[in-house]
Image (cartoon, rainbow, N blue to C red; front, side, top):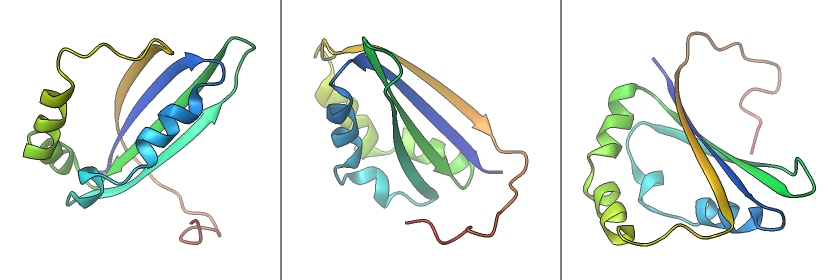
Amino acid sequence: MMLIQTRTFTVEKGNSDKVVERFSTPGPLEEMEGLIDISVSVNKKSKDEEEVLVLVRWESEEAWKNWEKSDAHIQGHRNSRGQEKPAYILGVNVNMYEVKTVKEGKASGKQA
């Protein structure tokens, strides 16, 4: 069963590129077994805020759990412990979804 994790960052207008850059930089996550892909999208929704949606697709819940307990993930949190989140980040919402069905279209497999 595929698992999708979403992280929705609400940021001050003009700062979405900083979050996009953070998730576009190569890191240990991409090396994890079971990671399908990471998509980063921006919604410039109002005059005061922007929203960055990070969508992480895993082959299974087990693959995600392996990342959560990996040395690289734990060390990343240790390194940022005690640091305040940047002021431009107004909020973060995290959700997990079990994928129940996938229907592929004609362009499936052609995306970059």
